[in-house]
Image (cartoon, rainbow, N blue to C red; front, side, top):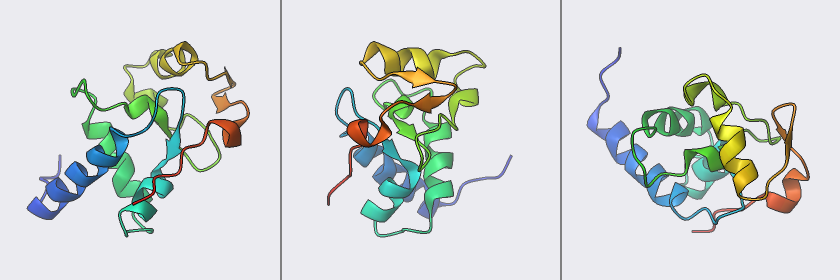
Length: 111
């Protein structure tokens, strides 16, 4: 396992600040968060931050998906369908790991 440097820790905290603002019943993408933070090419690093957040109850990681609405991070939810179940409990329909009407549910971070 790689040791994170302090710059990553700061970036992760900035990612979490955005993720905490995703409204109930909405989703955003790794890339949209990266862009909002002024680091448009860092979507993968946003994904790493989301992966590292699963022990933090105040981070709604289930609301962060890939750029086309696929639940690309679902395997980080303990190998279950928990990510899908959490989204569906918020009124977001998921079929074959894809958010139905993705554009309707998409939230664009605006900073």
